[in-house]
Length: 274
Image 1 (cartoon, helix red, strand yellow):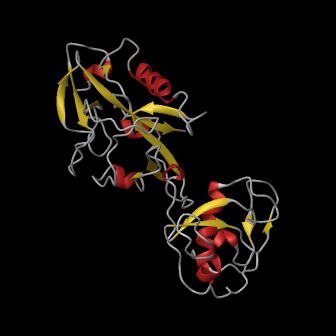
Image 2 (cartoon, one colour):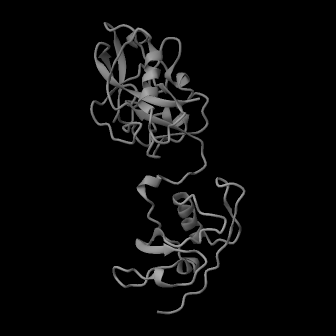
Image 3 (spheres, helix red, strand yellow):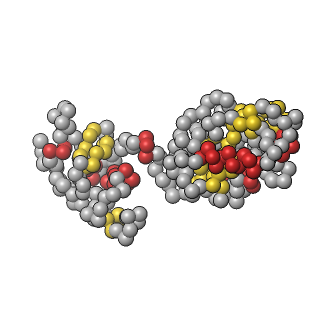
């Protein structure tokens, strides 16, 4: 086994645990690995990422990641006895393919985000308290969900006084809308209201897929405005109201699919609100 060139560790500047920033000098390939390690192991100290036993995946091969060290026993796969790729090899010019843990979610691109989910259970279409009741239901369904602590949620419902778009505060929002799994539903409000959803809203507050039922109370057009009827502001069980379809196609059907009897039941879309 030939000797690998030495890989020098570059220390992290630490002002606070949440503000680690790498100094200049990292090759792009090593930056990729470092970002993953920092995200997965936030307890790394000021000594940098040089902690033995940190497991990662580089080209699908187990690597005991220890920045700043030469090739050693950690560079041999115990199960096969074969030599693994090292950070030195990556630094030589090849970009590593990092298999990210599904639990870590997609990398953060720095764009502001708000969460959106669909309730895991169906609800009656009317209540004496109207839309305030449904906002409360969204809060209840988000309770205890990891990552949603302290966040406010409102129902994607329109009334004659206020459109769903304005009700959830999406009319003035400058960021993206994401599922709790990290997947992007819409890159911005324009995509949300112009039939350009990247992912359907079929995941609940806990990240579980919701496939049935697939009707959702909305009273809302594809552009986020009121679609009448709306169960008379969600208070009249003898009226009808517009529903969306969670797996709706490209014509805004996610929010404007068909009229349903308000005495029936359907799901709710819940949007993080300011």
